[in-house]
Amino acid sequence: MSDKRVILTFSIRKTNRQSMRRLPPLGALRAFEAAARHLSFTLAAAELCVTQAAISHQIRQLEDWLGARLFERRGHVLKLTTKGRTYAPELAGALDRIAAATLRLQEPDERLLRITVLPSFASRWLVPRLEAFRALHPEIDVRLVSSAEVWEFATERFDLGIRSGLGKWAGLKADLIAREGLSPVCSPSLANGPPALRVPADLHHVRLLHDTPREAWRYWCDQAGIDGLEVDAGASFNDASLALQAAVEGQGVALGRLMLAADDLRAGRLVQPFDVVLPNDYSYWLVYPPAALDKPQVEAFRAWLLSEAKQRNEPIPAL
Image (cartoon, rainbow, N blue to C red; front, side, top):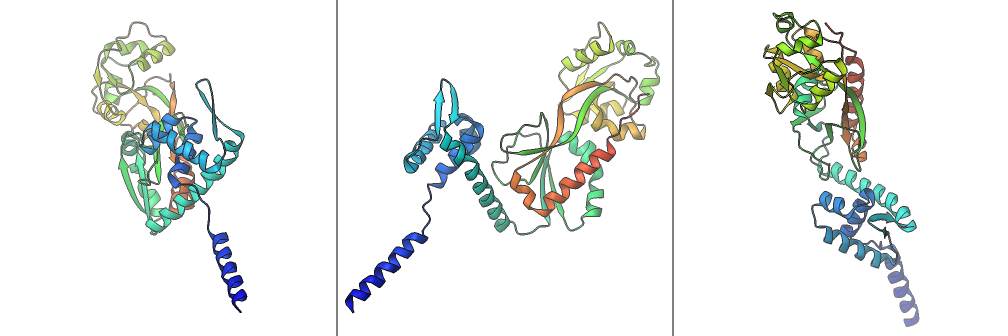
C-alpha cells in the first residue's frame, strides 16, 4: 500500500516538472535579439535605453545559461556564431508574437489606428486625403501625430510611421510611398513677372526660399546650367510646408519637393517654371514593425495609402 503511494507521488511530481518551461531571463533575450539584429552592442543599448555594459552583461548571462557562445569578435567586427545565427531569427519571431499578443490584450479596440507623420507630409499630402480613407473605413479612428522625431518603434506608442529616408530602418519593414524630386516652384504672378521667369538664368532676379540644405540649389543650378546664382541668400524655413506656403504667397521661389507641392501645382496656386528636376536620394516611406500587420486597421490603411500614392503621383507638367 505504501509502495503504491510513493510511486504515485513520484509520478505526479515528474509530470509537473516536465510541463514547466525552461526559459532564460527575458531581459537577456531582448538584449541578444537587439544586438543580433544590429550586430552592435552600442545600437542595441540605445534601442533598449540601457548602457552598453548592461547589454554585454545580459548577453554573457544568456551565454552562461545556454552553455554556448552566441557572438564572436573579429577585430572591431561583431559576428554571430553558428548557434547565434540559428537562435536569433527564432527568438525574433517569438518576441514579435509576444509583442503582438500583448498589444492585442492592451488595445483590443480595432477601431484605433495610431500614426506618426512628418509635419510637411501631413499638412501638404496626407491630411487633405484622409477624408477619402474615412469614407472607406468609417469604423477606424485615426490618431495622427505630426512629428519629425526619430522614433524606432521601441515602444508600442504608434502602429505606423511615415518618414523620409533611404528605406532602411533596423528591425522594421518599409514600403515605398513615393520617390521625391526637387524643382523650383513659385506663385503664377511671380513667374509672370516682371521680371518673368522664362529660362533658369532668370532666377538671378528673384528671391530664393530654402528648406533643404543650400547645396541642393547648387546641384540644381549645375544640372540646369546656371552659373553664379547666389544660393546663400534668401529666406530659410525648418519645414518644407512653410517654404511652399511662402512660395504660394509670392515671397520667392522655393526648390520645392514636387510630391508635397502636387496639390498646389494642380490647383494653380504654384507653378513649376522649368522642367529641370533634381532627384532626391531621400524618399517617403511607410514604416512599421512586422507584427503591426496583424492588426486589420493597419493593413487597411497600408493598402489605401499605397494605392492612393500610386494613383495621385502622376508627373506635374512644367509651365
